[in-house]
Length: 301
Image (tube, rainbow, N blue to C red):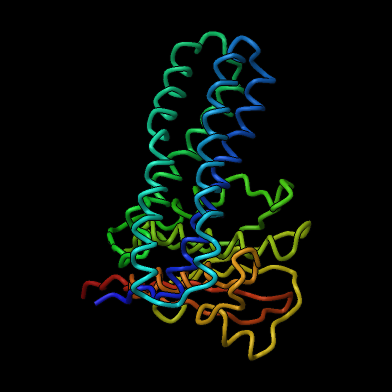
């Protein structure tokens, strides 16, 4: 049976849900602003769609704000279970407008195709990617439930290329330089959604702790596993800190970036697939590693 998130982690999962999902709408609003600058002909429609995205993001943030005091003040499972049901319901109601927002953006893209500049089309596509990612990553009905695994054979190199093609920005909106170094992997059995979520947690954690510095993502094969290492140029961690990462939260304060839920989540997402999570130091700074089992092909006699 897959490990269920313990109550304290579920409690923090709501915090992580609010923080990360609201970010999707901030990103959507930003790229729509860029689209307006390059295609004035669609400004009125983009203004309206941008306002809708901002409204949804603020609504989710407000639900989290209203819930925060309870989250910080109770450890009683029965109280928490009832509050979780209420939280899911409110998040569901707040995000009901996402499908229509996606539909309207697609319609605008079709109807204004001849009037949109290539840059505007690219920005609208980025907004659609953000909203689709929200739908995949943050289904409110799954908050606090067991991890569902959908294993399948996929080209790992293509998966990593798509993942790292994203435009990563830090908390201040500054672009993040990601240095990619990989060895050819080929086909691998894994859950692309869970692996993407785990990797996203590690990447965002790494660059938010070292703003303005590059991030290094390397992957390859070793000892029957495919590993992915995420390294930044931050101060090295002591043994006590390394032992805690992915196992314990650093604090109960929801607003503290060291709350540690993202790394706990990464560990659970990898273990659900038969993989592992590990924290250690590299030659340049902290290194967070994910691994997945890799069966070597049988050679014919």
